[in-house]
Image (cartoon, rainbow, N blue to C red; front, side, top):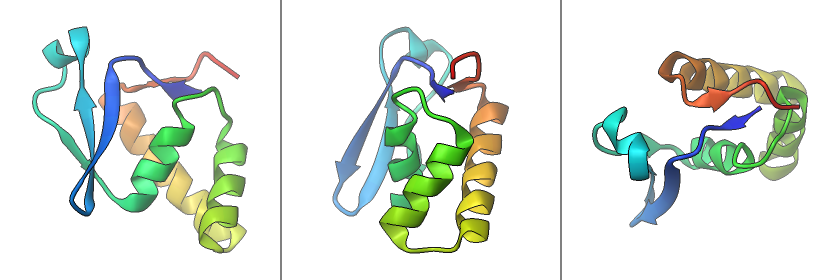
Length: 91
């Protein structure tokens, strides 16, 4: 799975923002604030990656348990799916 085209991530001060670009601006009004963890996952999703791989990367980056990483990834992916910003046809 991966993030659909039409977004860029920017760090502004101590915040991360997902900014719609191009035709995506028709669907998404404004910018989307992300936590540091959300931005980390989002950046990984710019390339084709599985949910399991995302959890593994989160465990490595933040030294958290498999359960915590899996729960955080699942929650973030659910939110992305609700927004229809993720392409699940890959992987």
